[in-house]
Length: 210
Image (tube, rainbow, N blue to C red; front, side, top):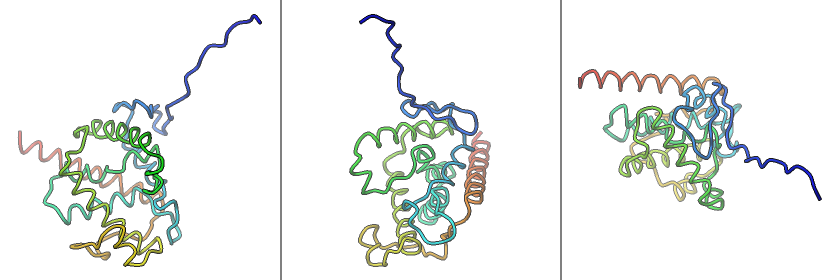
């Protein structure tokens, strides 16, 4: 059978962002990462697969703000460490949030993409490509405390059940946190504003060192 062979085409692995960037999910470049895209995306990704109470979805953007608040409460830290806490779930602006039990089933492929995106995001904002282990552990502790309060206040967990999965929080109370879900546009605004505040603090610290 004769005929012209069809050219082989690679599957599309990039996503067009609202900023106009094309972000390659398999080999992301820091040059294609924009804060506006991160804030927009995270504000529209629901935590807990959307299984939370309230008139609005509880977004990853709002979760990130809570984690950074807890991280500051528990640690003496500079703006760079706080920024890494704020951005700890930044890859989810393109790959979405996946609950932990499902992540365990999916396995290494998801984690590989997540780590590459994390490195691209952090390099874009002048942070280390990989979060130091000691800092990652502190951020993870804040993340688990946030999950405890989200579980008990929004996702229908009893306090005993949440403590079993996430541990009993110490040094933080729910009154310290903005736990009531806010509209996506408000979560986006608050996330971007906190990012800009931390960037201003970083710039001020650099000037003082100069």
